[in-house]
Length: 279
Image 1 (spheres, helix red, strand yellow):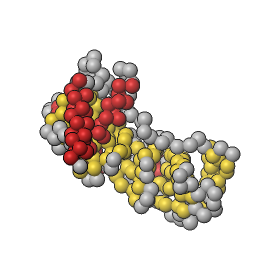
Image 2 (tube, helix red, strand yellow):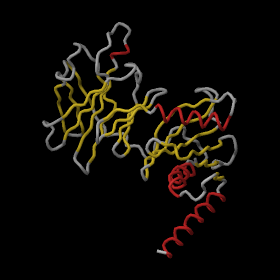
Image 3 (spheres, rainbow, N blue to C red):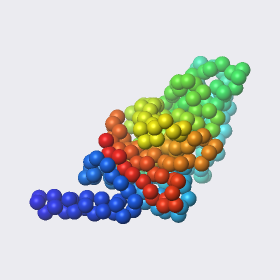
Image 4 (cartoon, rainbow, N blue to C red):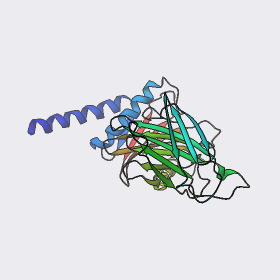
């Protein structure tokens, strides 16, 4: 046990030494291995970008499988490879006669033979259209037995929250749904929909703490990495959405608690000019 503890201590010292060499400053709990480890993949990905900053880091996203789709009279059909799947949604769509559904993403969990189709109702955006519920659907089924499918429906608040072009991606057992300035997540174990408002607010406060009253705002808020029970969210920091960002922020959450955040300075020639603040 003593040798194992000594080995762990040495590994932590090496990590701190590496961070120091690469331009990192770590404040407060420097030996918090969980916190420092969750940012290592992000730092490595930044190094691989060869000096070109990617505003949205999607290296760990499952963006789904290719597909084509058809929707008519509450019957949804999708084509995945050589397979065609058809689903009758009449029982879920009882509050109106006309919907315009668009596939946001189709995800395949090969290990468990589960396919998840996320559908978004964009008809709600037409001015002359009455709001109908639901606005989101998840169809879950087995590729081997597609006839035994389940449909999960969600009412979005407000109903037009996600706009026209919904971005949808999966990380582990979570499907994230992205609007222009909004982020929500569906837990594929519980099928519960949750809005990431608390995480957004916490990251916003971190930016205010770092930049004070400077005219900077956060844009492109996303979840970018899930590792070791922690979720890392990111956002770019800029004066406006159409102006180059001056920094990136990466915030590590465990459960409902913000554990640490990292600021990456984009105003210097050194791409890996960053600091980690452990809370």
